[in-house]
Image (cartoon, rainbow, N blue to C red; front, side, top):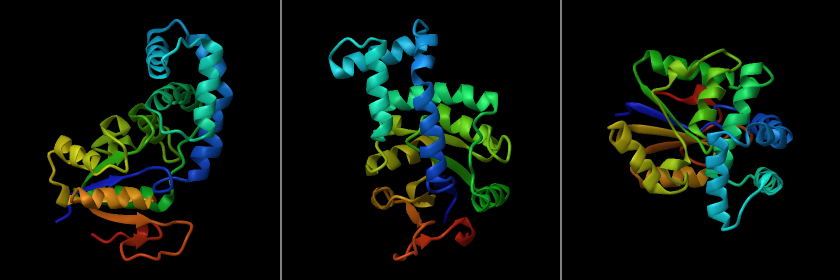
Length: 221
């Protein structure tokens, strides 16, 4: 029996193009200015120190800009980049320059499921901070109330079954009681290996698999 929904964001509840073309571009354009402005602040010092340790060399402002721009352009799922982007996006969301894109079908279905008593969690490669900003400043206003928890890759890679086992443990809900929604086949595979139910969300292509839906209107619980 399904008790909880675990959903991805990019390509699932929200447009891939908005995340990549608007949000990623916003963080890339404002990267240098943000780092310059906050260079001496603790949260940036921690990120830069961690990056220096990771790359095993001292990182100054110019190198940091080059490294993070390269990560953005290559869509590297790096936790330090995601943390930094979360800070940059915070300014954009709070100023009104950014609004989290949510598909209408996703918003309405998640709202319906919440009202029916299902627990709803998010698992995305974007930082937890970024996730809360995205849903807190969405096209439908602040919809963070729909969610019972947020997970990012600090709990583990999205293509690793152990990440889903850890999420189930953290929520104290058995894996078999979860329905995971994602547009990435390898993530679906990993979640099923962990014991979860899972459905591929294929918004842009016809469904060619058994457990596949075109949008959230096709979810029947």
